[in-house]
Image (tube, rainbow, N blue to C red; front, side, top):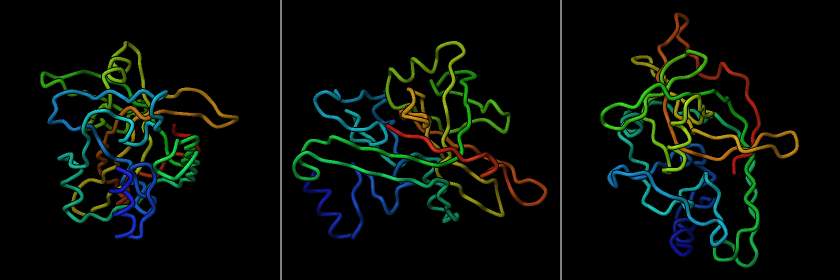
Length: 223
């Protein structure tokens, strides 16, 4: 795996970031477990191989970026706007990529929204909505079976971090985001783990804008 990453880094002049790429960091966060496997995945044992939840390397089973909803938006060449600022720092004990990862700090500044599960349909897809009432959450995919079980508990909520925005004059604005669960605090900063992805489709308002970017940005640490 390290050899493959190093090869593509040389070919593209991009900077690897634990399975993601710094130069396309916002979009590269939007991976999902492979739906063709018909199940959610499980995470690797962090005591054996530590990898932060934001990276697809933390999962045992296959992942992809080819979710139908996002694929349609990418191929439509809709302008994409990253909705986050980030500060990423990784420390290795030994050679980078092949040594032991001892620190993988990521601070992200973006708009957070609270999400709750409203139902689960016959095809086993989660139906979610934003607590502030701005719209339903679509294309929801949860990373692991444990995360899914936690999210289905009565009264459970998750946090949506807006990652990318797609604007179009001809149809609704889309916001793709990460679903997160809060795990604690590091100083004054809330810490979260990734549990999945989801998308919001906004109807354009009378002034031609949408709800995108209307929240107050917060800085969090994503583990």
